[in-house]
Picture 1 (cartoon, protein in one colour):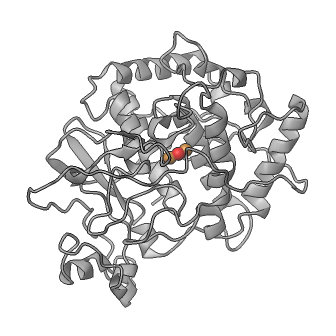
Picture 2 (picture 1 turned 45 degrees about the horizontal axis):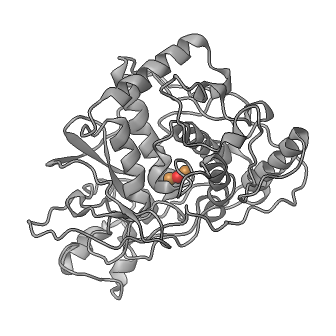
Length: 411
Ligand code: C2O
């Protein structure tokens, strides 16, 4: 599947100088994956993973084109077994969409064990999503460069989303909860005693792309503009490195008060932030950031697994390892934005709350843009995975009022 929204033609700035800056993961409250409590569920099992659509569809009749989830069902069912990890087939199936009826508490912190309930409102309808065919490409623009007309539209859309009742799946609150549920362990993998975690593995880019896609479509629909596209925080280019000004007006629906007060514009973001502010000039920070970008996008991500992260299949323990952008600038920005006055660095500094800050979606629009840029860089191995367990991973996301869409990532 092609990217639903192509990156803006705004050129990305990548320094050609060598790099020494470290981008290794840091311990933080973002690194969560464990949940502790599930409500009992005694109703009938309901399969919510998307139907297979790609059997042989690419003209490949070999066994690995077979939908292996069907094998799992044949072997006792996705729901029949509690743990199939000793079964050879169990090691070869994509992460399936969660059963929404089995959503439980999400864990905010492994240390304090504090939990939060962020499951979606009850639903009866989960339908397979088919991406529409577009006649027109929608372009996202850099948030620091948008014009007043665009800003007025975007502001209106966010205002309308915030005004939706909390139990509407399209509401600001429920959209933020999606991130909480998928990232703080509210869902088990169907048929396995393992959480679903969309970070720290090859699911990172696909999940967030689909999540943004629906967010953007909801906003477009609310203002009656099917061509609406979200802005991106252009943190890879010097002029875009501070938090974009449109997000810091306290009277705007783009504002969030749980942010680090010391990191307001014109402060330049630190793409290598490890929890401590560096005592360097803006100019030096920009230089450091450009080196980080070069390392993450060019020298350090020459293969799919370096860029995307490690393989994560049905039955696997969550968080096998993230790609360089995810662990590097992506995580650094979350931590840099989060408010140190809050217990868990809310909002951006913790997965459960990150989606409550409108800035999150601009941040991830740029993360998504990095994916498109990476694919276009020279190098034979800069291609996405062709493994069907990556292509067929599926997620339930929400778009319409009473309907949930199940989207199989890329097949
Ligand atoms: Cu799902 Cu930036 O995190």
